[in-house]
Length: 165
Image (tube, rainbow, N blue to C red; front, side, top):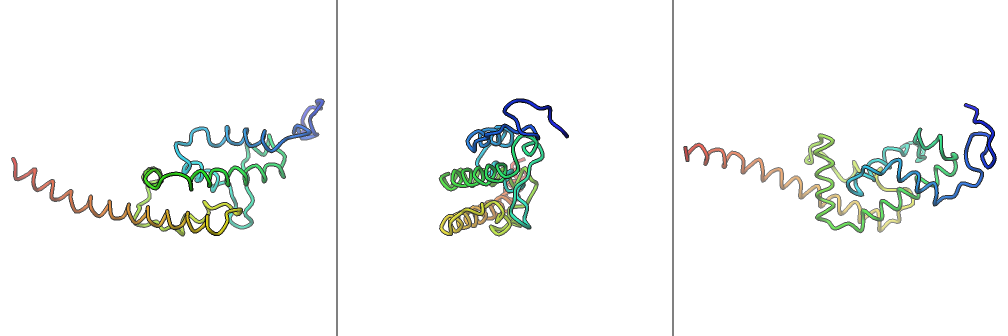
């Protein structure tokens, strides 16, 4: 599609001097506005990253942000959100992962920390990767134990209710 020629715009309609901070603002507004937690945001950003070459793509943003700047923008945003996630308390992380698994209709006993590997940005340092994986392993273990407890307690509650009638 040819863009109308306007002063300050390239032939594809991009501002001539797009800045990283402006494109971060645009990407954040477009992609993460409805996110309830950093984990939701991580899920969105991880879904935009191709597994074969690690590049990011979003059709809507590709129409508004130059290709090279889009890569830098989404990689930077992914790293920022990842760091926010690492700063989140384990209890809040657990609640966010639980909501995600429930919302995605995934069983927490079938997930592993390895299945969330794509949530880690390429720029993450080794200690950050290990912290993410360790936190996630603990969270998934807690959720499995919680599910086992619920499954064990439900029949007991049901039998107690029947005996009270």
